[in-house]
Image 1: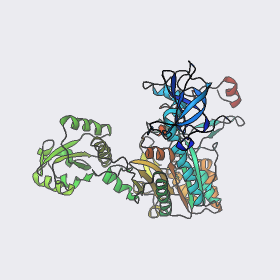
Image 2: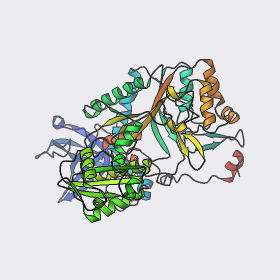
Image 3: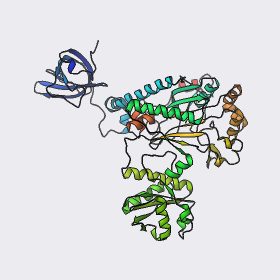
Image 4: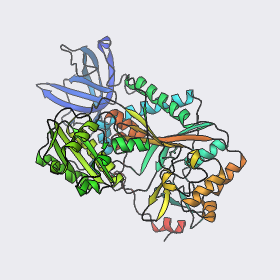
Length: 560
Ligand code: ASP
């Protein structure tokens, strides 16, 4: 036996016991003949006093200490073990640590290279919490009769909107496996197999240009259910999240609000609305369409936001540059003073129009109104981004709040200008709403899907849909998004064929586990909850991957 207790375990009731602890030197300080050591492990910290210490004992070294538990004259309330201290009689150095290569100036590269040190000293609690979330969810899914099934990592490429990572086959030179962007096709086939309820905590790999909040691999709570409607899937997820928050955080979540995609875009300027605060967008296109002010009257759409604040010229310039980074041509504003418009574009807006705008916005006090006049898409989205920024700047978000919502009825297709081609908004396995099934090819921009997102505090947590289980409809959709008959057969023949042998109606979701855990812990960066994340260029400074392979390996794989 190397230890009798962990470093977080000893309490007053242990006073008098002979114990043995193992851990890392957290702090060390000498006071006359006495040395004070804080010894740590993932369970906590215990304070130790010892008469003789080896001269070389450095911080972060691993030690084993034997001694007697004593009551502390004055309790250290900051530590769970704070009522006691260990009077050490014997100290053994198990492994000596060099000075750590990390300080507050360390670059991200260095931090990731020595990730294990950050795990030891700061990331640990995040990983412990993540493990609790996973354990709770796995148990919950079992209670709800789901079957946990692993699907292959080496598979055929599944286009889900991102580039695949590919793996060359040694036995079949010139052929490649793809790593899954998600287990989408397998889970669909499992429904044909009769599994009824499937779940997997699945690694999903996507070779994308990384944005700050993305990782080439992420984990999804991936599940699928047979004989369900959208409502059934959403009810299940809502119940799951409510229980998770109750169990782990003792928080009672409110019922999830539900928006259609259209409504979400209209009110919040985004399909991932943060509903912890107001500042909703107002569409005033109709009120300004006849003004002698071309910026407004010629625009496809004019949206605005009222804020009960007076902003400096400098603030307004900053917000103007901000909306421009979101493709708006500009930002117009007026100041509201005693129910009239002043400065900014006030001179172009007659008093009676101003009155109508104030009425629509239900403005009582003074403040500022920001307008973006542009195409519908830009007016909504630029102002949506500004809405989030204003809320942050004005500090009106309650960061202890968790507000989930559903965004339903997503468009099924989006137009890819570069490819000149309609593409699936999400993936091509989602059902069009019934009324569009016969005619989707004719008016693709109108088509809504049985396709939805789960959103938490302004972040997309996951997407789901009812799937196409009719092979003929699936083929039509494939053709429409650019796979001709041959290609569809070549790429997805196995899926299409499966539905010829009895395919149930089914639907499901993939919910981002990393994002969920990060948001609960208050992080915007999912790397805080991933043990070994990649850097922003998709590299791992820890093991230096990706790295070249040797000539021998290349030859075996038939690569040049
Ligand atoms: N496979 C989808 C995704 O990765 C999720 C789903 O539709 O179930 O986003």
